[in-house]
Image (cartoon, rainbow, N blue to C red):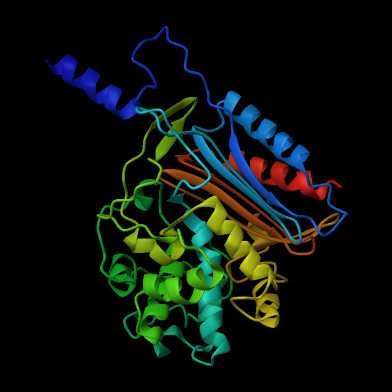
Length: 385
């Protein structure tokens, strides 16, 4: 009986594509859709781009780089390419598609940073005053005062997860102010402004500030002032008890095997990594950034100023306000963010000078390098002109 129960448990976790070890599971080809009407002849964008992109994704699938993945590419004055490949559910062999909903993990952070900068533009928030001005619930720290600027740039001294296990939360918090109870009493790692340490908890504090000064929940603020403005109708917080008709099951990749991911509660880090979206919607977010629909161009310039050396000092890319910033010698300035958490790996890039947006969402933790590689390879199809 024990052996039987263990066998059932292993099958449930691994969720094999077939219980027949001799069966051959055909990997479905990439399904894509394009909406191209190019006004700029410098881009060789046509059906050839679609076929090349699909071939690249099919090669990734054949190499077992993903279980399920959605991909998107936006080209200014041309249009969009979106696709889905693989499975959203192993047991049912349900195909993923370009409208499949998935966790975007830390791609949430630039959205939160833009929301903060909207409030700064309105004169509601000062970036350089102690955060207790807006959030009295966060205690003063012996190592020094934390400002919003510190939180945006990950230089506050607030810790990140102490381990991979620390990132697994199954507790639901009604607000981000409540969520701070999990970490607000910890001592800072260093004096604010003196070092760089990536911190999702720091971005949770930014979400709490948004809630306090706007008198709205984080989710309602983001819907009204970010997602609706950008036309992101399929983007929301992942609510723990809510049922979604087109979301993907989450997986973990261990070596070459995909197993079910634990269903974590994201309310502790809603403003750092609690958003779910689609590849299509994230292309709309990138387009909104490019067209200054959410903040002024001068505010975006402030956000992507990453001239300090604190992040590169520990081997990370230069970091502005919610964006990793890279100056490519061939393609110009690129702002981007990746993210991983149980059930997802994701990467999002805006090639500012080329006005191109690229996004990849995988339904599996453990495919971080693969989503970066695919995002770059898809963008290069438009960039290599």
